[in-house]
Image 1 (tube, rainbow over the protein chains, first blue to last red):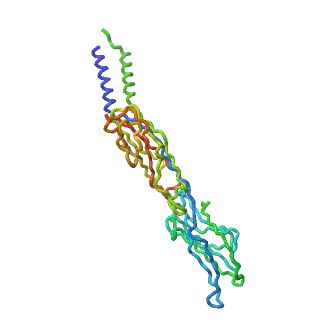
Image 2: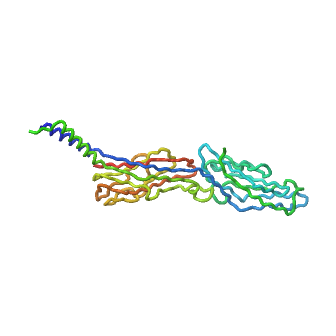
Length: 180
Length: 164
């Protein structure tokens, strides 16, 4: 009997020692989920512009092509690693004054993922047309001087078609969209 | 003379096991944090970057502790299921719940890493047997447009350790 009691006591102390000597633990957990959605927003920094064909300084010369570069296209884009976006331009059914063609060039600043210019695009052919391609995840910045500079030229194409006093208003729309 | 039979011996051992098992402290955590980041989180108009930092609500996640020993601590770590390396996760304790004396640690944000780090422990007044409603708050920073669109998930583990 003494042997049995002694054995039980020994085992008891062993368990007690084990229970207290080892740091007992319990664990609980929860999730943290950050869902980053695709973002495609753009805006134009600048105001409405007016391009006026004026009389040349010297009689007999062709009027110069009025130009404007005061507007900036600014955009924020987030895309997956294998996707790019483009910005296209459209002109909702309006026309340039007779004898003129409107040209637009968008020139990104060259910062990472802000895309590249697609060159000068005229508004006489099929629209919409891309003005910037290869846009990745980027934020161009806001305010004057940030983003892609918009360079408009109203080119006198057919001198004989010009109509004095003719004035047209065109609404130009830019769209940032996924490349298919 | 009475003798302890083999059967009684094993019954005693089982009781002892049960007793030891019943001492084990228990930690439970309630709540999750889901943060959706979209164009509404831009710092300004188009062309601006995303807000870099986000916090969970102060009443979103809480911890309950039961069957506490006299001395213990809670450690915290994370395990990334799908996580961008630019994202940093921080944690702080918002309240001490029903603790009789203020808990020590967890004041102010601390970085949560992939290995256990001390979070909080009982104050100098000693520990209660149970503490409920210890609210915690989480923060993530490092968000920018350079984080590709995706669903990022990390698990935050809270471990209570008896310091005997």
